Length: 78
Image (cartoon, rainbow, N blue to C red):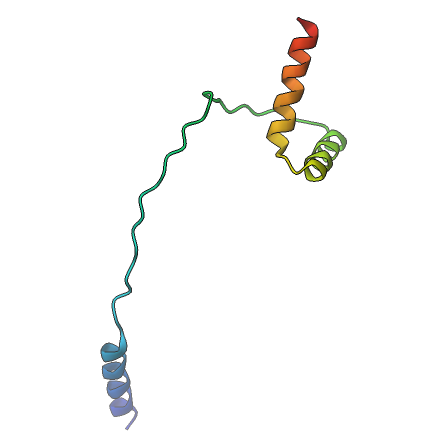
């Protein structure tokens, strides 16, 4: 009896399944204004927290804050 129920369930499942339809959309490439490289360095935890807090307050990325800071430092020592 269980075998008949199992066969009928399998048949129902085969009839019910439909191939999902996927939409394909082209990927838009965004060209960066400048070529960038990735670097890794360590920050003291307290400094990282301050930068992160400032980024949240100003609604900008941490990356932009660090870039502006480095540019300002370079300009100041030149």
